[in-house]
Image (cartoon, rainbow, N blue to C red):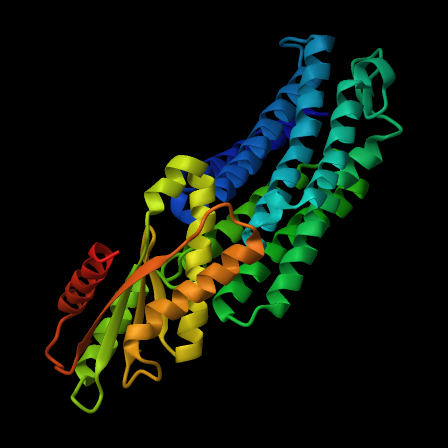
Length: 379
């Protein structure tokens, strides 16, 4: 490789590292459950290590600054395996996002087999040459199993896309549907780049394509997070307060407005006993129960924060307001039984109804919250 191409590789890779590094730094706990965020960060870290190791091997093979065949082998092993691990962790991340119970299913163990085979092929290559080998001229050469190692990350990406699109096309809520379709779009750039890389070997194509895929999915996700809660898929506090500000001026004795504040009972005990990952799962269960009751009664619902949820209703409630908490707890028990939870979840509910258009959103929340804690004190 001539020096111009080498410099091009270095510049492109540095830009990719900067882009993915910025994305990784901006991934917060608001981006999903604790386990989802962990998998996404691992995917990004794997990509970063893939880039650094690949660039190190490339520089060693194309300059006279320093060279060690052992280091060259190590750099290529790390680069190849991390590329596959990046796709593997992305696959797990998508599965968790579209199916919160993925980690509980025994079939998930089968998804580890391809990545384990890739790891064995790459680590054994210095002795077998299966994935790659370095010839006597210190040139990197593809081995007989290189195609398999290269195809595995694409298969993980294809599986992620199929799962995301399947759930997206079957999802009724537009918010979740758009999010799932967004995950499914990740594969386009890496797939096109992989095809081009076959005919344009030696060109810096794959790395920027993967970085672009991360960037597109991340920016779309950030846009969703403006009004949506990434853990439960419900609206967030910001959207709930906007809804309050929109509807309260229309309030009158003929058009009352009701706010329901919902809070999990003894939720700290679940976190302390089962851990925060299970705590996230419990919040999702409460969110599902709240969403189902809200849909039945035509309420607006949102996650207010932590294990607190908010339901809002402009106009007369179809159900007795006193029985809303009972409805949520019945749905919650059903969800916990279906998922085989080792604990029982329940919520307390407080509500406040206003008939005054001069009422403020702060007052509505404060009064509903006061009624909530009155309900909790009676348990």
